[in-house]
Amino acid sequence: MKDTLGEGPRKFNAPAALALAALSGVMHGACFPRPGLWPLAFVALGPLVAAVRGRAAGAAFALGWVEGTIASSIAVVPWIAAAARDYFEMGPGRAWLFGALTGQIFGAITFAIFAAAAARLGRLRSPSGRVLAMAAAWTALELLRARAFTGAPWDLLAHALYTRPVFIQAADLGGAFLVSFVLAASCVAVGEAIVASRREKIVALATAALLVALDAGYGAWRLRAIDDAAGPSVRVALVQGNVPNRWRSDPMRFDDAFRAFTEPTREVLREKPDLVVWPENAVSFLLAPNPRFTRTLAAILGPEGPPLLLGGPRYESAHGRARFYNAAYLVSPRGAMLTFYDKRHLAPFAEYSPLGRLPWIGWRFDAPGDYTAGARPGIFSAAGGFGVLICFEVIYPELSRDLARSGARFLLNLSNDAWFGTSAGLEQHFAMSVLRAVETRRALARATNTGISALVAPSGRIAARFPEHVRGGWIVRVPLRDGRTPYMRAGDVFAFSSALAAAAALLFAPRRS
Image (tube, rainbow, N blue to C red):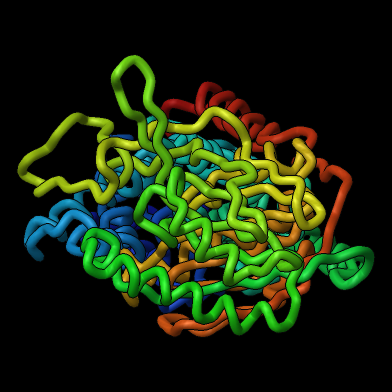
């Protein structure tokens, strides 16, 4: 191999390159919760960038696939397998196979394409150009993963920093993708430091250091400028029932599941909240017409009590065919259904089948049939005006942006994450909700069945977080916000611009070193 003090870049032999790709995969998977070793997000892609330098696209693609397979096996395959065992009632073998295939399709292939692109972009003569072009390529692939097919923006690089608000404030400018760009640039510079000449590694590291400094400086400035407690607010009661999933499909346990939410609700009503919130699928039966349910809620809330927002199934019949929706209902203190929201972005395989019936999975729906997607944003005028995101909808920034632009003054995420059990999926899902608060500068409250129930302030600080896998109700003071961030106005312009820049760099990169 050539020495880094010489004229050419270092090129590792095949075993060393494979070891670097594997190291990159371990660091990438470990930067997300859990274990959540967030500093690794600044370096995780570096060894892969070093491994592919000087290699043909095919060899680089294979190294990227190795990295992506290891990363997804650490970060996402375990929780997907846990959810598949619980939701689809799969055996352990099929559950792990399903998780591994999902990790390959939505994770490993992205790393492989990035590695092939990085091998070509590594031929650019400017070290700064290499850092920026590879960071743009990574950002473009995150955008592709977030939008293609059903969209899977799970564990973007930015999500690793959800507990470090100083580094994620730039999301109000360019979304989570801008934060990922900065992290990817830092990673590429680390790779350059491994393979480039002394002069070039200094330039590459200086370029990344400048980007990180600008990001942190902007973050420090925004955190000083934002007062999460200023202005009007509402008091919201978050009720966590901690109901086992098996109760939802057992008619004999419907009353037990219902009491799991009504008992903590009676307790929090003593503190006179402005709104009570139950999570997604808090009830498994049809709410309307249901006089018994109406009378029970009216007795609990009282005529002077607050409205209740809760998740449950909804159906409508047209032309002899029933359509079912995963809905959020707003119920008056007298038990009357005021309005509802139907989930717009359904989860593939869990709420609808994008590939048709797959008997080998052991398919099962808890709903009476496939869900139908809703058509309108979930804007509710009660409690100052809020927008609703059901379960995985919180991982899609375009949905929260749409709600804020439509008048939501804070966001509510209703979710049933019991399918994750105690796996890392609980924490990873919560991590993504933090970025939604920063992007829109709207507080985001989460009401979940088993956790993580929490309040994220408009600054992205975690203002309140409650115990997991316990039954209870808690009051949070939610600030109301108006106004529009640059990200709300421009959307993913930065990410699309990165895609164009990466395409141009690939087009003009030399074909040979």
